[in-house]
Image (cartoon, rainbow, N blue to C red; front, side, top):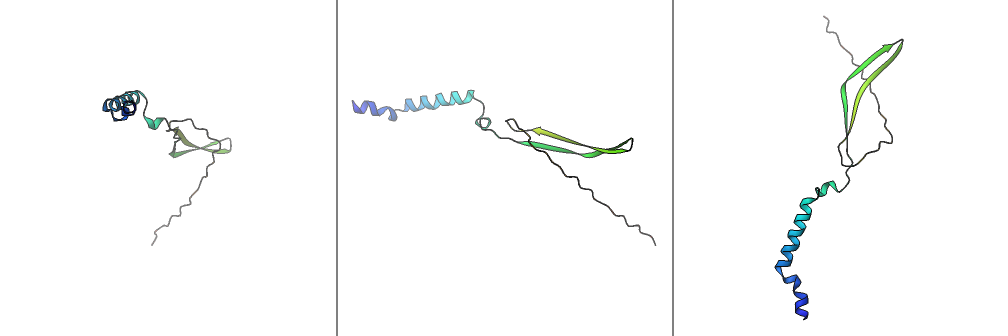
Length: 95
């Protein structure tokens, strides 16, 4: 009697049924990588800038595109940026 109760783990039919059943269940679910949240943010800054002068008020526009590339919602709590102006000096080659 004890041998009959303990022989389930030796039965190859049981294990093949278990593997086949789990394969069918996993094939119907989305990929496991999508189960885990992975926040990801892609930032694209345009290489062009628009400058305008309306009634003496100078302003500029920079296009920034934020794209959520992860599989979970993102919340941006703070956004700061820095603008660096490089001064270019030109040398005139005069004889």
